[in-house]
Length: 418
Ligand code: EPZ
Image (cartoon, rainbow, N blue to C red; front, side, top):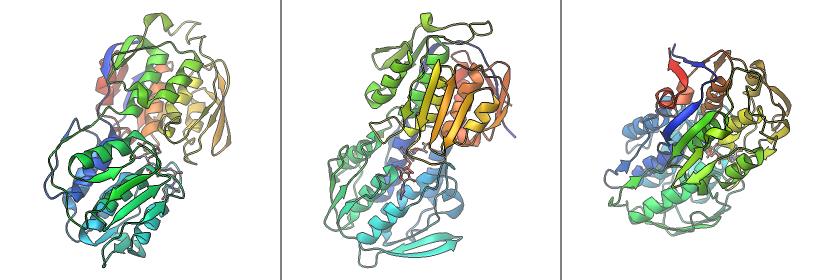
């Protein structure tokens, strides 16, 4: 079985680029169902979730059947469902799989499709958990999300593009990925107004497919950018992270500043200067300048839940007590037990709150990656720990990060696959 083997304590120097965004690429790939022709996407990250989406779309035919085995591997398999329902008048699919970070229901999607005129049948066994039909077609509606959902907003925008009449989506999320999707669809003939605000208006095309004309260039991954910045904060020695879109990480950058991390923003890069770095191995093993800070995850523009685990690693090196409040998912602090085995002192108060007491020295050990983001957090922990860390179940990390070991080696990290 493949694992990452990490030896901690090396400074990270030089330049590293942020790759294309997973969560911007996936909805645009799914939107190909709305098109008459094939679509072109540039800067697509070569990661497992993108490969699964391509396989899923390759297998999708006019029966609207979403492949059971593939869909069980990732949450974003729900993304093409609404488009398939609108295009074929029927769709059958399993409850989507993905990271085990909470319950992850799909009720806001189902409510939306039902209100638009679809009929839902549950079967709860392979090859489909849900069978949805829309014999009369789908109709534009005024729909308010009872809970703001990222993929929910994306899926219902795509459904509405082929519905009859105007749809208004209220309490929509503000994540940048929504605007990327809407801009791409608009550039190819759709009429979507208000993406990036809480109210989105879509003029339905009554089943008329879009004609492809304009390619999508996948923007840099803001979560990879934030994770690499945390590495820069802990280990950077004249480290430049390129393709860094600061405007998408403003809350994160304020927190980094509060913790006392020194960084410079320059020409789409973030730079971690040499003077902030303190050598590993001696009694000054960790920076003493870092200060504890509380963090609460929120929908955009709040602090992203996808950066909560990597940020907690940073907080283990900060002086004082930090409260980590995870408000989006109830299972996203599960990695803390393993982190404590590496030497951190973190008290889990309840499924949503943890108190980090710092600074603590971490030491390497054998870990398994629980999900994409906690997996990357373990890599960060391994890189600052003394001794050797091994991380198994790396499929979870490769779902979201392309060639991560190779790229981190290029800036000086001691990480390899065995
Ligand atoms: C997206 O997941 C991202 N995935 C997640 O990234 C990210 O953590 C999350 O948004 C929040 O930012 C993709 O973009 C592919 P939600 P999504 O629906 O859309 C509840 C990663 O590592 N909810 O916005 O699945 C839900 O339980 C992944 O890249 C319902 O109650 O998240 C959660 O508490 C992990 N009913 C909250 O809403 C529903 O029908 C927000 O979830 C849907 C969601």
